[in-house]
Image (tube, rainbow, N blue to C red; front, side, top):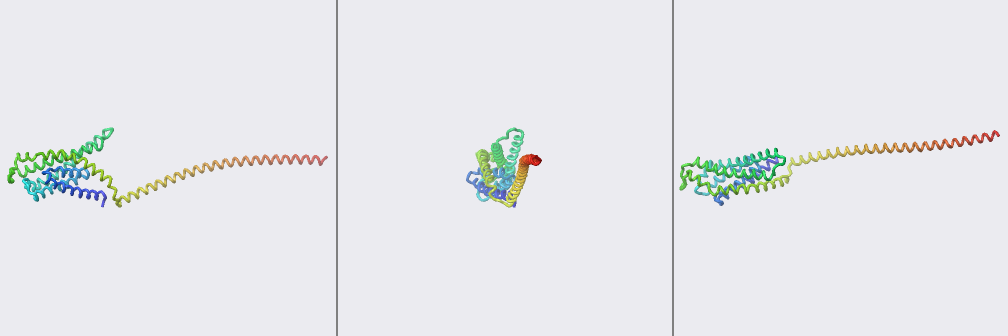
Length: 283
């Protein structure tokens, strides 16, 4: 299996488990959804749109299951998947879409600037805006679906009308829209740093093939470099030998010339001696 697919599957499994755990914490935090929303934003930024959809669906599914298991005044409302699941799937799309759009705008701006904007600043802004829009659309879509599906209906003491819908926009929304981006930014950077640091700990067959190719390329380059160096060395040695030969030839020539001169002088002396002897014989 491709290592990127394996990595994505593993990350999705971890994020789904975290989403289940964080959604259950809403029972303790009074229905505040900032923790599952943080998981959703992190998955959207780190992995991508399909993970955002999966996490949004998980968020909604656990909310619906909790409404059946744990009774509350609003439980009958969230037992309907149009209220509990559909809006959560859509907020995953919103979180990923806003983050991607802001990142795209920053890239366009950097292309026109001489000096690019700080990467940490741009990613922090993109993640924060994705988190803010996720919280906003979570509240907006859930309330809209409650109004569309249950408007005018009575659930015990709850009468679903405009006043009731407005009453649901409480302190929870204010806390979520502040806390979610504040938590999402450092978590995104921490997870991203961890993944980059550990993504090469598992060596796959593909990694081995890449390493072999690089080794062969390095070996080829090294062999060529050595061959070129040897060729240059041989040329240098040839020039040096040629120079040595020329120098030796010059020395030998001088020696031979000196010997010839000396021999000529000896012959001349012998001729003079013979001339003297002949003159003496005639006398």
